[in-house]
Image (tube, rainbow, N blue to C red; front, side, top):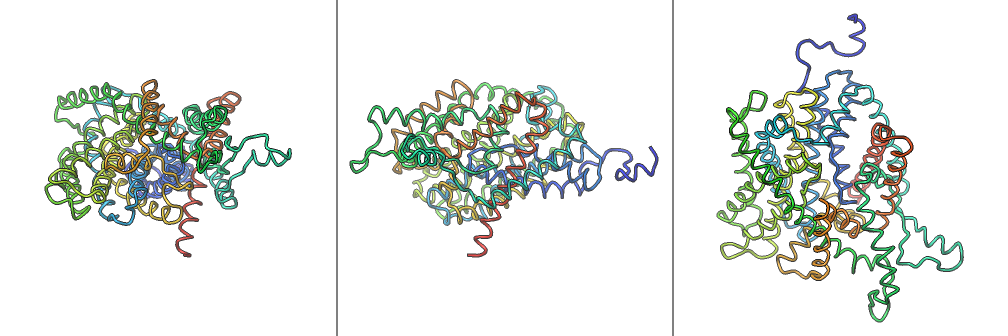
Amino acid sequence: MSDQTVKQQGPLTYGPYPELTPQAVIVGYFLGAIIAVSIGYASLKLGFSIEGSELAAILGFGILRGILRRRSIVENNVTQTVASAVNGASSGMMFSVPAIFILGYGYEFNPYILTFGAIAGAFLGIAFIIPLRKQMIDFERLTYPGGVAVASILKAPGAGITKAIMLVSAALVSGIVYGFTDGMDFDLFSWLNSLVGREILPEYLNGVWFISLMTVGVGFIAGRGGVAFIVGGYVCYWILAPLLDVTGLLPVVNGVEVTDPNSLRLMLFRPTGIGMLIGGAVIGVIFAFPLIKSAISSMQSSSKVASGISRDEMPIKLLYIAIIGASILLAVMAITSTKEVGIVRGILMALFGTVWIWMAGIILSEAIGRTNWSPLSGMTLIGVTILIIVTQSFGGMETGPAIIAAITVGAAACVAMSQATDLMLDLKTGYLVGATPRMQQAGQFLGAWLGPILIIVLIFVLHRVYGLGSNELPAPQGEALASMVKGITGGEVPHEKYIAGAALGGLLTALQGGLGITVGLGFYLPFNVVLTYSIGTLLREISDRTMGKAWSDNTGIPIAAGLIVGEALVGVGIATSMILNA
């Protein structure tokens, strides 16, 4: 290859490939911010959170190779690591912080303290999991399917640029459509009834469709993994509601039989769904005990490796400094979260929080490495429960301050767990493409601080415009956490529906990991979301069968990801505009 040709293709590289470069970090920040806002918005709408690594890898190719003309695969790997580290806060905070707003304390906590605590939690989660990289990835060779998928993208550089173009094009289409429709619904069954001039389809069957390409995109990416979610929704309105009608068991209010689907959801299906989320999460943790045993074995084996950390990893002294510093910051955050906490109780909360971050991060990394399924919500529920118990020590705290303190520290723990699993997925990708672990680990630290700042701003903006827990932003995981906190602190909750749902969710999760949670989401969310989501699942099934899985992976998923990003960014943009113009 001539020098002239090389110059045309990009910068000439000698010696080791560029890896942790300013370009990689800056592009990672840019992509991470877009992905965190998009996925954070989608998780409040749908209750799902998807890994951002694949999106970051695809878009990273588009910028690093397509625009900046850089050619290092490991540099793109660092970009993806930084971007996914920024996004790590979206699932961590969206599963926990909305509970404070839903419980009515949204303007009584200190957002600065919560944000710094989340950053401290992120550093703790990263520092705790790094020593286990060699054992879990090099020695045990855990699968980490998500990390393998991202590695396949990085190894196909030409396809990566093409995917980036498809993703951006789909984002433009999705954004334009949402800009015109603004989350409208289409009532298909009412339209059919009016067409024939009489009611042929009862009101409770609920044939309202949510006009949302983002929802279609999420259904496509989830594929068969989302079938249980669809089943949950269809069971509510197309099986249970007709059965209640036929048997005369529909609820009666003021002497009138309730057939309005939204009223049925609020009275029956949503509380049952919340119970299923809680029961499924708790049983999921119990069934993760074999993985806990395996994680402990990994820790023991890791400690026998000479020096614990090899030269490929970050220096162990730096990790100690990160752990000690983050733990102190967590203690300060716990003490200052509310006036009633006090020094002793705050230190206790930080101590339990730090231990829980260490244990849960390892368990989740083991779980996602072996099954690609993460019981994050269950670990968060248990962590917050422990913290609420601590708030009742030394005479106990009042309900409001106790809830704020427990969820504030719990959010930090949730972000820590999310960062630990995200880093292990990225390290698996790096292992497969020949990246240097310490470069990725440094990239994870560099990206982890930005996510909590972006997400807390996003939460306040969206809550002010739409209201967390509303039909526009149901925030299912936050609602489940809020309901559990209400139950613990003696608030009014429909115990019988929660207990029945918890039993059902636990049973389903016992049959298959995560099943109770996904079916419970179908019970919880408005049916218009489920109907539109099912279109995405159907399209994925059709494309897999007719075009082949390779087409779905290489063409369908980038387009679906673009549909998510486009609508989410426009939705957040509209909310921001409304606040600025208010």
